[in-house]
Image (cartoon, rainbow, N blue to C red):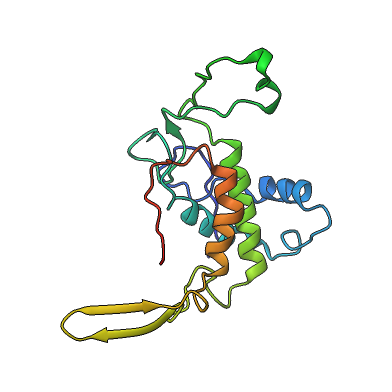
Length: 187
């Protein structure tokens, strides 16, 4: 059975933030000499877009879902739009009160979605790029009177997918994600 993308904002059956055509247009603009996305099998592209939507929806976005029936995290209400770069000069300093209207998918979400889908295509389907190495950073475990786990920072590693989210996706989404998330510190 062929995969079907549903990109209607707010739909109860939506499974992607962008179509293959939208993602292809963005890929050509963002990576004009990279053919990773363009040369991929159309079904693999659809799978990557669906997987990318699921991964993006794990973020704690600002605001509230537009409807309780929608399948994806966006569209949302009560989220300020990011001011355009050309309107942030000192001469035009004003309070930004423009909000997303609850029926639109912000461009940063679509850009992050396209970048993540392209990353998933580049990684292939052989392994999960978000899977952590089961022993990453653990140097010893003791089960005496209490559980004790020691970590060795030199051997600690994060998955390629987690690294991609931190260095590429989160900066694109920075003003749309809640900022009061606890920070995890290893020591």
